[in-house]
Length: 298
Image (cartoon, rainbow, N blue to C red):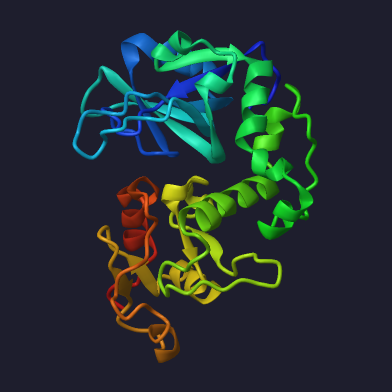
């Protein structure tokens, strides 16, 4: 069980959008052992904030760099040495939950230079304010709550330092935030496999936010571990009847898939993915689904 005792300071891990280390977003964090091992050990079992700096890499696919923003929360779990490079280590990032609205460092009281190292700490009251901003969608007006399926949530509008850690692990909060990030923001309410967009009388999209790597198996509540799928496609995806290639190609099991499901799939055989490539499913999670869930040879 994570340690949610209130501390004077809350840890922050800094992860770049295009990491030079072997991070797996929301699952593993890779860091240089000599500089940061003791800090990571002191934060083990505790909730941390995840920060993305402006420097995002120099490759052609990352011209804009990072967002200079806090992007979510996680709990640090098991630590082990990198078997290929003993100068580095991995730490498991459990219960990762992505903010629907990244909190830019310029909107906080934290000096930018504080976040130049990859593991730092901030005051717990500051962390509480950041989390409140990041999950602002669950504090929205009743009409917006209803539209995005958050009407049943009862959330304090004042997330104090004593509340913020338990707040971020409430399944209702995590599910609502994950759904908003995947269905509303990334996929605009459209099923990735069928292309259909259906709404109910309140304008709420009738599609699910499906985890690619399941929560039960360590999958994070991150847009890159999500797909917007109709309920039928969600059912088929969870049972390994359909899957997704890294290039967006829809994969169908050789057996067990009836014509009623095949007729629903996009005739092009390619999923509709978000306009922003940085919201596309991460290859790590897609590989997990294809190897652990998909019935490719059945």
